[in-house]
Length: 390
Image (cartoon, rainbow, N blue to C red):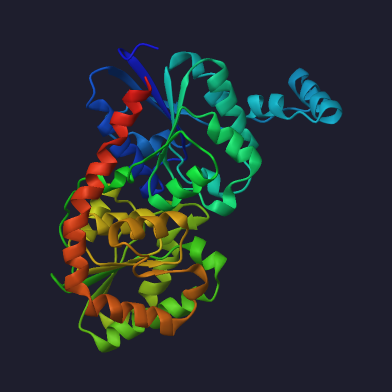
């Protein structure tokens, strides 16, 4: 493959209703477009309309799973292959044909769903990867986060087929290398490079005295008692400090909408006149613009916390996965102010961590100011690693 006139497809992007996914696409496309050998960047997306405001994307492709009519020729062939040969590959080729049909159009494929491998076996993903490599194209996993418990034999086999895996934190790098993968390089999440867009501050915002708070239906679903504990934390903040609390959504998707659950928080505490609910129609750079002007941040969504870290705002993380733990460890040398999913239903632990964040504010800021420039350099190296592959 020539390193000139490269055409790159970013794929496994559900759409920018998830502002973290938007941040990944924004920063990946911007990084790659700085290299004049890349002449085209395409995006395969589940929701093209949500992505059209993202710069540096040349072509948007709708990525939508196809259905197979069981009475059609394809359905009959699929049924025979599954029943008699236990072979699902043909079925997955048909289901994912919206991506597979794009393979001839591009030279290099960036799988940008960095945590897709955290959710059990993914035979459909494996088949897409197989088809890309069968066509002789380059395949890269961009910004991966994978726990040790996620690494099955089948998954490891698929990961070995990649020309390059870019791990976004050291816990994932360690897990992959211990599993025998030799195609791994350490970077940082590209969202650390994302710029801010500053909108006017809303009424009740106290400059220098506003705490950001993000909560997600995903966390509530996994630990139903967590919402009551979070209510107790907000009440504690309002009763023991003079801070304003700003509720900030970061994923706005049907069935997984931060705004809907944060409305409950706002309604519960609005009579205090010290709470704000940001609207659900801002883009990732605009939400980051508000986060950057906060004194502290408490968040469940990883990319909301990355927006805070990268703005040097002391941050407390509510119950998340290997990516949040690894990112915090890479910044602070330990899992600093990261609460495990099982801990966030304990109001006492939430309040204790909040007090720890307040008391260590200066140290946290100093560490962030020292480490974030280094983390950004790691994130920027991703494009160099990509170009080395070709």
